[in-house]
Length: 118
Image (cartoon, rainbow, N blue to C red; front, side, top):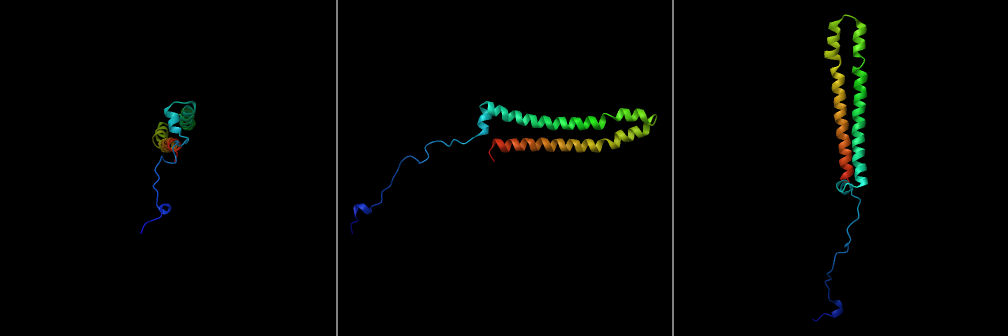
């Protein structure tokens, strides 16, 4: 049984339909090529890290700075000074350090998420 030539299947080959590259916005290339926009991204990360560091420094100054004045006003109570220095200062310092590390990690993760388009 002979088929009609109009019913015959034809295989079409050619270039793919998307011959143009996708012009997607890629922050990573902006940073790698050191453009002004890439510089702005890096500066934003640096500013957020600096803001966290200055916050920790301000809290540290407010926490530890007045201690010499407090100790001077207490007179001759050396035992209490060592208790304050040994036991009362370290828990807030540890909490402050923990907050800073978590904040710095979060800033870096946000930056990586921005750069990798996730």
